[in-house]
Length: 324
Image 1 (tube, rainbow, N blue to C red):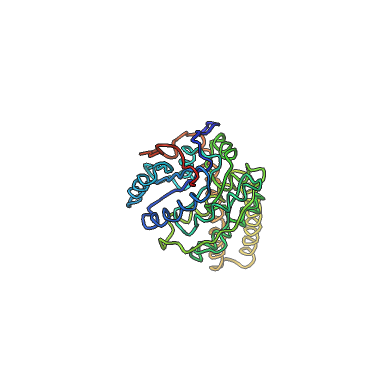
Image 2 (image 1 turned 90 degrees about the horizontal axis):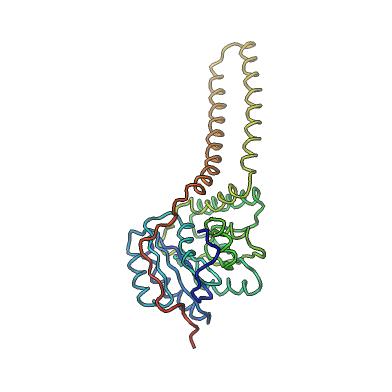
């Protein structure tokens, strides 16, 4: 991931789509995606990355490759290292001057691709997206929105929805992220971009009925941005620790004086327990926060491959050319 040059395939556009146990929606995706791309009138390639699916997703991808071998790449990974790693695996084999990421689930429609490219034609080097409507459960939507607000306060990065998949990247942005040995995420691309923007996309009903990536995948981009580009969380936790220590000390003195004046009280036990539980919660929160920073250091130092590839099916005759 540390090369500065990308492979030249002759494609003007590369579309990278991670897949994870989504056999129920792939056929519908194929029927909608390829007509949209054919209608663009440019040379393109589609890179499907199967992240260790255990259903028939890999079989359906192989079949689609046989139907459109000139424009289709299929990467079959040995395991599921998460959506960012799957996307980066597709980025590594892509060669388009522009790159679009898309979710396999049709709740993020392929019809958004022309709008993303139109914004790039206006001079933007990164075009993100945000969901106009949340079709996830109310709990997932609330958690995502809360994490977005917290991330904006901590990092000052103004993105509406960094977990939304339809995004368009200029190749220079992608190469800069690869040079930094980072995984491609919308939040990171926003930081590298000179002229970023975003569009709203309709979040249609998810065909599979439930998300194929855990809730953590929705909040992970925000955690990465907070721990990767800001020390404010650690600084705030340090200040909170000092404040709590002072308040706890004053409370301990008051309880001691109360014991001397009034004598032993059974109720004091409950007060002590409440203080201890509060402090224990803050300690656990701090350990988790520090753990995020340590995790980033470990991932950057161990040089472990993020996406071991089991099979790679690639185009036989180059990317598709405009249909006449």
